[in-house]
Length: 391
Image 1 (cartoon, helix red, strand yellow):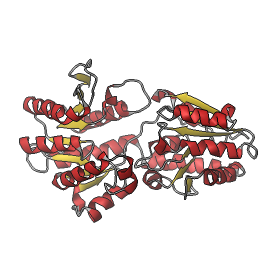
Image 2 (tube, rainbow, N blue to C red; image 1 turned 120 degrees about the horizontal axis):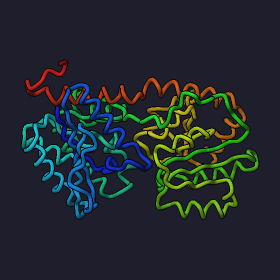
Image 3 (tube, one colour; image 1 turned 180 degrees about the horizontal axis):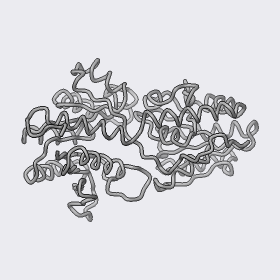
Image 4 (cartoon, rainbow, N blue to C red; image 1 turned 120 degrees about the vertical axis):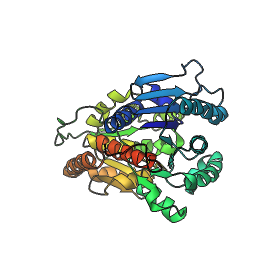
Protein backbone atom coordinates (compact mmCIF):
# COMPACT_ATOMS: atom_id res chain seq x y z
CA UNK A 1 0.00 0.00 0.00
CA UNK A 2 1.27 3.47 -0.88
CA UNK A 3 0.10 6.53 1.04
CA UNK A 4 0.36 10.16 -0.03
CA UNK A 5 0.57 12.37 3.07
CA UNK A 6 0.06 16.15 2.79
CA UNK A 7 1.51 17.95 5.81
CA UNK A 8 2.12 21.48 7.09
CA UNK A 9 5.09 20.38 9.20
CA UNK A 10 8.57 19.95 7.73
CA UNK A 11 10.17 19.01 11.06
CA UNK A 12 10.10 15.42 9.78
CA UNK A 13 13.30 16.43 7.97
CA UNK A 14 15.05 17.32 11.25
CA UNK A 15 17.18 14.61 12.81
CA UNK A 16 17.71 16.80 15.88
CA UNK A 17 15.39 19.24 17.59
CA UNK A 18 12.69 19.59 20.26
CA UNK A 19 10.04 17.30 18.71
CA UNK A 20 9.54 13.67 17.73
CA UNK A 21 7.89 14.19 14.32
CA UNK A 22 10.62 12.31 12.46
CA UNK A 23 10.53 9.31 14.82
CA UNK A 24 6.72 9.19 14.67
CA UNK A 25 6.58 9.17 10.86
CA UNK A 26 9.30 6.56 10.64
CA UNK A 27 7.21 4.47 13.03
CA UNK A 28 4.16 4.88 10.78
CA UNK A 29 6.18 3.92 7.70
CA UNK A 30 7.77 0.88 9.33
CA UNK A 31 4.41 -0.28 10.68
CA UNK A 32 2.76 0.11 7.28
CA UNK A 33 5.56 -1.84 5.62
CA UNK A 34 5.26 -4.58 8.23
CA UNK A 35 1.52 -4.86 7.55
CA UNK A 36 2.00 -4.67 3.76
CA UNK A 37 5.43 -5.52 2.42
CA UNK A 38 6.76 -2.95 -0.03
CA UNK A 39 4.52 -0.12 1.19
CA UNK A 40 5.75 3.48 1.11
CA UNK A 41 4.62 6.79 2.59
CA UNK A 42 5.19 9.71 0.21
CA UNK A 43 5.04 12.85 2.37
CA UNK A 44 4.63 16.32 0.84
CA UNK A 45 5.50 18.92 3.49
CA UNK A 46 5.22 22.68 3.65
CA UNK A 47 8.67 24.29 3.57
CA UNK A 48 9.79 27.79 2.60
CA UNK A 49 13.44 26.78 2.52
CA UNK A 50 14.48 27.12 -1.12
CA UNK A 51 17.84 25.46 -0.43
CA UNK A 52 16.32 22.07 0.31
CA UNK A 53 16.44 19.25 -2.22
CA UNK A 54 13.16 18.23 -3.85
CA UNK A 55 13.24 14.71 -2.43
CA UNK A 56 14.57 13.05 0.74
CA UNK A 57 14.48 9.30 1.27
CA UNK A 58 14.52 8.90 5.07
CA UNK A 59 14.37 5.14 4.68
CA UNK A 60 13.07 2.71 2.08
CA UNK A 61 9.50 3.21 3.33
CA UNK A 62 9.38 7.00 3.85
CA UNK A 63 10.11 9.64 1.20
CA UNK A 64 9.68 13.35 1.94
CA UNK A 65 9.10 16.08 -0.65
CA UNK A 66 9.46 19.67 0.69
CA UNK A 67 7.39 22.17 -1.33
CA UNK A 68 10.11 24.87 -1.15
CA UNK A 69 7.31 27.44 -1.42
CA UNK A 70 8.26 31.09 -1.95
CA UNK A 71 5.34 32.12 0.27
CA UNK A 72 3.00 30.37 2.69
CA UNK A 73 0.03 31.22 0.44
CA UNK A 74 1.65 29.30 -2.42
CA UNK A 75 1.72 26.03 -0.46
CA UNK A 76 -1.56 24.61 -1.85
CA UNK A 77 -0.42 25.19 -5.43
CA UNK A 78 3.05 23.77 -4.80
CA UNK A 79 1.72 20.80 -2.83
CA UNK A 80 -0.84 19.98 -5.53
CA UNK A 81 1.84 20.10 -8.25
CA UNK A 82 4.15 17.82 -6.26
CA UNK A 83 1.32 15.47 -5.27
CA UNK A 84 0.16 15.29 -8.87
CA UNK A 85 3.61 14.12 -9.97
CA UNK A 86 3.70 11.52 -7.19
CA UNK A 87 0.30 10.15 -8.19
CA UNK A 88 1.41 9.98 -11.81
CA UNK A 89 4.60 8.10 -11.00
CA UNK A 90 3.33 5.80 -8.23
CA UNK A 91 0.26 3.75 -7.47
CA UNK A 92 -1.23 5.65 -4.54
CA UNK A 93 -3.91 3.84 -2.55
CA UNK A 94 -4.77 6.51 0.04
CA UNK A 95 -4.33 10.27 0.48
CA UNK A 96 -4.02 11.66 4.02
CA UNK A 97 -3.93 15.30 5.14
CA UNK A 98 -2.75 16.69 8.47
CA UNK A 99 -5.69 19.13 8.74
CA UNK A 100 -8.95 19.82 6.87
CA UNK A 101 -7.68 23.23 5.76
CA UNK A 102 -5.42 24.09 2.81
CA UNK A 103 -3.56 20.78 2.94
CA UNK A 104 -6.96 19.12 3.21
CA UNK A 105 -8.11 20.91 0.09
CA UNK A 106 -5.06 19.59 -1.77
CA UNK A 107 -5.74 16.07 -0.54
CA UNK A 108 -9.42 16.26 -1.49
CA UNK A 109 -8.70 17.56 -5.01
CA UNK A 110 -6.04 14.94 -5.69
CA UNK A 111 -8.35 12.24 -4.39
CA UNK A 112 -11.12 13.30 -6.73
CA UNK A 113 -8.75 13.69 -9.67
CA UNK A 114 -7.27 10.18 -9.31
CA UNK A 115 -10.26 8.46 -7.66
CA UNK A 116 -8.25 7.74 -4.49
CA UNK A 117 -9.84 7.61 -1.02
CA UNK A 118 -9.14 10.70 1.08
CA UNK A 119 -8.47 10.46 4.84
CA UNK A 120 -8.64 13.80 6.70
CA UNK A 121 -7.45 14.64 10.18
CA UNK A 122 -9.35 17.06 12.41
CA UNK A 123 -7.17 19.67 14.10
CA UNK A 124 -8.32 21.35 16.32
CA UNK A 125 -10.89 19.02 17.80
CA UNK A 126 -13.67 21.61 17.58
CA UNK A 127 -13.87 24.10 14.71
CA UNK A 128 -16.37 26.16 16.73
CA UNK A 129 -14.08 26.55 19.77
CA UNK A 130 -14.36 30.28 20.66
CA UNK A 131 -10.85 30.40 22.11
CA UNK A 132 -9.37 28.99 18.90
CA UNK A 133 -11.43 31.35 16.76
CA UNK A 134 -10.23 34.37 18.73
CA UNK A 135 -6.54 33.47 18.45
CA UNK A 136 -6.27 34.53 14.80
CA UNK A 137 -8.75 35.98 12.35
CA UNK A 138 -7.72 33.41 9.73
CA UNK A 139 -9.07 30.67 12.00
CA UNK A 140 -12.57 31.82 11.04
CA UNK A 141 -11.67 31.19 7.42
CA UNK A 142 -10.21 27.81 8.37
CA UNK A 143 -13.47 26.91 10.08
CA UNK A 144 -15.44 27.55 6.90
CA UNK A 145 -12.97 25.53 4.81
CA UNK A 146 -12.89 22.68 7.31
CA UNK A 147 -16.67 22.42 7.47
CA UNK A 148 -16.76 22.11 3.68
CA UNK A 149 -14.00 19.52 3.43
CA UNK A 150 -14.76 17.17 6.34
CA UNK A 151 -18.14 15.92 5.00
CA UNK A 152 -16.46 15.11 1.67
CA UNK A 153 -13.69 13.00 3.22
CA UNK A 154 -13.93 9.21 3.06
CA UNK A 155 -12.71 9.01 6.66
CA UNK A 156 -11.61 11.35 9.46
CA UNK A 157 -9.03 10.81 12.17
CA UNK A 158 -9.60 12.52 15.52
CA UNK A 159 -7.10 12.45 18.37
CA UNK A 160 -9.54 12.83 21.26
CA UNK A 161 -13.13 12.02 22.19
CA UNK A 162 -14.12 15.69 21.91
CA UNK A 163 -13.26 15.60 18.21
CA UNK A 164 -15.31 12.45 17.69
CA UNK A 165 -18.34 13.96 19.42
CA UNK A 166 -17.99 17.16 17.42
CA UNK A 167 -17.95 15.32 14.09
CA UNK A 168 -20.97 13.17 14.93
CA UNK A 169 -23.12 15.51 17.02
CA UNK A 170 -22.31 18.93 15.52
CA UNK A 171 -21.36 18.15 11.92
CA UNK A 172 -23.77 15.24 11.55
CA UNK A 173 -21.15 12.89 10.09
CA UNK A 174 -21.51 9.13 10.11
CA UNK A 175 -19.93 7.55 13.17
CA UNK A 176 -18.31 4.81 11.06
CA UNK A 177 -16.29 7.48 9.21
CA UNK A 178 -14.66 8.73 12.42
CA UNK A 179 -11.50 6.98 13.66
CA UNK A 180 -10.30 7.83 17.17
CA UNK A 181 -6.53 7.43 17.28
CA UNK A 182 -4.32 9.10 19.88
CA UNK A 183 -1.04 10.57 18.65
CA UNK A 184 1.91 8.31 19.50
CA UNK A 185 4.57 9.89 21.70
CA UNK A 186 8.07 8.46 21.64
CA UNK A 187 9.59 7.26 24.89
CA UNK A 188 12.55 9.57 25.24
CA UNK A 189 14.94 7.23 27.03
CA UNK A 190 14.83 3.90 28.82
CA UNK A 191 12.85 4.86 31.91
CA UNK A 192 12.37 1.43 33.45
CA UNK A 193 14.97 2.13 36.12
CA UNK A 194 13.30 5.28 37.45
CA UNK A 195 13.10 5.26 41.24
CA UNK A 196 9.59 6.59 41.73
CA UNK A 197 9.94 6.58 45.52
CA UNK A 198 13.03 8.82 45.43
CA UNK A 199 11.59 12.13 46.64
CA UNK A 200 13.55 14.96 48.24
CA UNK A 201 12.50 18.11 50.08
CA UNK A 202 13.18 20.13 46.93
CA UNK A 203 10.28 21.02 44.68
CA UNK A 204 11.29 21.28 41.03
CA UNK A 205 8.48 22.53 38.81
CA UNK A 206 8.84 21.81 35.11
CA UNK A 207 7.30 23.58 32.13
CA UNK A 208 7.98 22.41 28.56
CA UNK A 209 6.60 24.19 25.53
CA UNK A 210 6.76 27.25 23.30
CA UNK A 211 6.96 30.53 25.15
CA UNK A 212 3.87 32.17 23.71
CA UNK A 213 0.94 33.99 25.30
CA UNK A 214 -1.33 30.96 24.94
CA UNK A 215 0.86 28.92 27.31
CA UNK A 216 0.31 31.32 30.23
CA UNK A 217 3.85 31.01 31.60
CA UNK A 218 3.59 34.47 33.22
CA UNK A 219 1.15 33.00 35.73
CA UNK A 220 3.54 30.17 36.50
CA UNK A 221 6.34 32.64 37.29
CA UNK A 222 3.99 34.58 39.59
CA UNK A 223 3.14 31.29 41.29
CA UNK A 224 6.80 30.76 42.19
CA UNK A 225 6.94 34.28 43.67
CA UNK A 226 3.90 33.50 45.80
CA UNK A 227 5.38 30.22 47.08
CA UNK A 228 8.97 31.30 47.76
CA UNK A 229 8.31 31.81 51.48
CA UNK A 230 6.26 28.66 52.12
CA UNK A 231 8.41 26.45 49.87
CA UNK A 232 11.92 27.96 50.22
CA UNK A 233 13.54 25.29 48.03
CA UNK A 234 11.21 25.75 45.07
CA UNK A 235 12.67 25.85 41.56
CA UNK A 236 11.08 26.39 38.14
CA UNK A 237 12.69 24.96 35.01
CA UNK A 238 11.35 26.33 31.71
CA UNK A 239 12.30 24.26 28.67
CA UNK A 240 11.55 25.88 25.34
CA UNK A 241 11.79 29.18 23.51
CA UNK A 242 9.52 31.66 21.83
CA UNK A 243 8.60 35.32 21.40
CA UNK A 244 7.73 35.80 25.09
CA UNK A 245 11.04 34.63 26.52
CA UNK A 246 12.54 38.08 27.05
CA UNK A 247 9.37 39.32 28.74
CA UNK A 248 9.29 36.27 31.00
CA UNK A 249 12.92 36.71 32.01
CA UNK A 250 12.29 40.39 32.77
CA UNK A 251 9.19 39.47 34.77
CA UNK A 252 11.16 37.05 36.94
CA UNK A 253 13.76 39.74 37.59
CA UNK A 254 11.09 42.27 38.55
CA UNK A 255 9.73 39.78 41.08
CA UNK A 256 13.24 39.11 42.42
CA UNK A 257 13.08 35.38 41.77
CA UNK A 258 15.44 35.07 38.80
CA UNK A 259 17.70 32.73 40.84
CA UNK A 260 14.79 30.32 41.25
CA UNK A 261 14.05 30.06 37.53
CA UNK A 262 16.10 28.38 34.81
CA UNK A 263 15.46 29.08 31.14
CA UNK A 264 17.08 26.30 29.11
CA UNK A 265 16.00 27.41 25.65
CA UNK A 266 15.34 24.76 23.01
CA UNK A 267 16.55 21.29 24.00
CA UNK A 268 17.06 18.38 21.58
CA UNK A 269 14.34 15.79 21.94
CA UNK A 270 16.70 13.04 23.06
CA UNK A 271 17.85 15.26 25.95
CA UNK A 272 14.43 16.25 27.32
CA UNK A 273 14.06 13.05 29.36
CA UNK A 274 16.54 14.23 31.97
CA UNK A 275 14.29 17.19 32.81
CA UNK A 276 11.23 15.00 33.33
CA UNK A 277 13.34 12.64 35.39
CA UNK A 278 14.49 15.36 37.80
CA UNK A 279 11.14 17.19 38.09
CA UNK A 280 8.78 16.90 41.04
CA UNK A 281 5.75 18.16 39.12
CA UNK A 282 5.10 19.24 35.55
CA UNK A 283 2.78 22.25 35.34
CA UNK A 284 0.86 23.30 32.21
CA UNK A 285 -1.23 26.45 32.76
CA UNK A 286 -2.20 26.75 29.08
CA UNK A 287 -5.35 28.54 27.97
CA UNK A 288 -5.97 25.96 25.22
CA UNK A 289 -4.46 22.60 24.27
CA UNK A 290 -6.04 20.05 21.93
CA UNK A 291 -3.42 17.38 22.64
CA UNK A 292 -1.26 16.72 25.70
CA UNK A 293 2.06 15.45 24.42
CA UNK A 294 3.95 16.95 27.37
CA UNK A 295 1.52 15.28 29.77
CA UNK A 296 2.12 11.88 28.19
CA UNK A 297 5.89 12.35 28.19
CA UNK A 298 5.81 13.41 31.84
CA UNK A 299 3.74 10.36 32.75
CA UNK A 300 6.35 8.10 31.13
CA UNK A 301 8.76 9.37 33.79
CA UNK A 302 6.25 8.93 36.64
CA UNK A 303 6.04 12.70 37.03
CA UNK A 304 2.49 13.89 37.82
CA UNK A 305 1.03 16.89 36.01
CA UNK A 306 -0.89 19.91 37.24
CA UNK A 307 -2.79 21.45 34.33
CA UNK A 308 -5.70 23.67 33.44
CA UNK A 309 -8.82 21.94 32.12
CA UNK A 310 -7.94 22.09 28.45
CA UNK A 311 -9.26 19.42 26.08
CA UNK A 312 -5.87 17.74 25.96
CA UNK A 313 -5.56 17.59 29.75
CA UNK A 314 -9.13 16.39 30.26
CA UNK A 315 -8.49 13.54 27.83
CA UNK A 316 -5.41 12.25 29.66
CA UNK A 317 -5.36 13.28 33.34
CA UNK A 318 -7.43 11.41 35.90
CA UNK A 319 -7.98 14.21 38.41
CA UNK A 320 -6.49 13.35 41.80
CA UNK A 321 -5.12 10.01 40.55
CA UNK A 322 -2.46 10.85 37.92
CA UNK A 323 -2.42 14.62 38.30
CA UNK A 324 -4.46 17.67 39.20
CA UNK A 325 -6.90 19.52 36.94
CA UNK A 326 -7.27 23.21 37.75
CA UNK A 327 -10.61 24.96 37.47
CA UNK A 328 -8.82 28.23 36.71
CA UNK A 329 -5.38 29.27 35.48
CA UNK A 330 -4.67 31.98 38.07
CA UNK A 331 -1.38 32.01 40.03
CA UNK A 332 -3.42 31.58 43.22
CA UNK A 333 -5.06 28.38 41.97
CA UNK A 334 -1.74 26.93 40.80
CA UNK A 335 -0.03 27.89 44.08
CA UNK A 336 -2.77 26.28 46.19
CA UNK A 337 -2.49 23.02 44.29
CA UNK A 338 1.31 22.92 44.50
CA UNK A 339 1.28 23.71 48.22
CA UNK A 340 -1.01 20.78 48.94
CA UNK A 341 1.21 18.43 46.96
CA UNK A 342 4.38 19.71 48.62
CA UNK A 343 2.90 18.82 52.01
CA UNK A 344 1.88 15.34 50.86
CA UNK A 345 4.91 13.62 49.32
CA UNK A 346 3.17 10.26 49.33
CA UNK A 347 0.44 11.63 47.07
CA UNK A 348 3.06 12.77 44.56
CA UNK A 349 4.65 9.32 44.60
CA UNK A 350 1.35 7.49 44.21
CA UNK A 351 0.17 9.76 41.41
CA UNK A 352 3.46 9.20 39.62
CA UNK A 353 3.07 5.43 39.83
CA UNK A 354 -0.49 5.58 38.51
CA UNK A 355 0.51 7.99 35.73
CA UNK A 356 3.29 5.72 34.48
CA UNK A 357 1.01 2.68 34.57
CA UNK A 358 -1.76 4.50 32.70
CA UNK A 359 0.36 5.89 29.89
CA UNK A 360 2.25 2.63 29.36
CA UNK A 361 -1.06 0.89 28.70
CA UNK A 362 -3.08 3.58 26.95
CA UNK A 363 -0.44 5.36 24.87
CA UNK A 364 1.89 2.61 23.72
CA UNK A 365 3.44 4.05 20.50
CA UNK A 366 3.57 0.75 18.62
CA UNK A 367 -0.06 -0.07 19.41
CA UNK A 368 -1.28 3.38 18.37
CA UNK A 369 0.70 3.21 15.11
CA UNK A 370 -0.82 -0.20 14.35
CA UNK A 371 -4.32 1.15 14.98
CA UNK A 372 -3.78 4.08 12.63
CA UNK A 373 -2.26 1.94 9.89
CA UNK A 374 -5.15 -0.52 10.22
CA UNK A 375 -7.56 2.37 9.64
CA UNK A 376 -5.54 3.47 6.59
CA UNK A 377 -5.67 -0.03 5.14
CA UNK A 378 -9.40 -0.35 5.74
CA UNK A 379 -10.20 2.99 4.11
CA UNK A 380 -7.63 2.67 1.34
CA UNK A 381 -8.95 -0.66 0.11
CA UNK A 382 -12.64 -0.22 0.94
CA UNK A 383 -13.58 1.04 -2.53
CA UNK A 384 -11.62 -1.45 -4.61
CA UNK A 385 -10.38 -5.03 -4.75
CA UNK A 386 -6.68 -4.26 -5.20
CA UNK A 387 -5.58 -5.97 -2.02
CA UNK A 388 -6.71 -8.21 0.80
CA UNK A 389 -5.55 -6.39 3.96
CA UNK A 390 -5.34 -9.63 5.92
CA UNK A 391 -2.62 -11.09 3.74
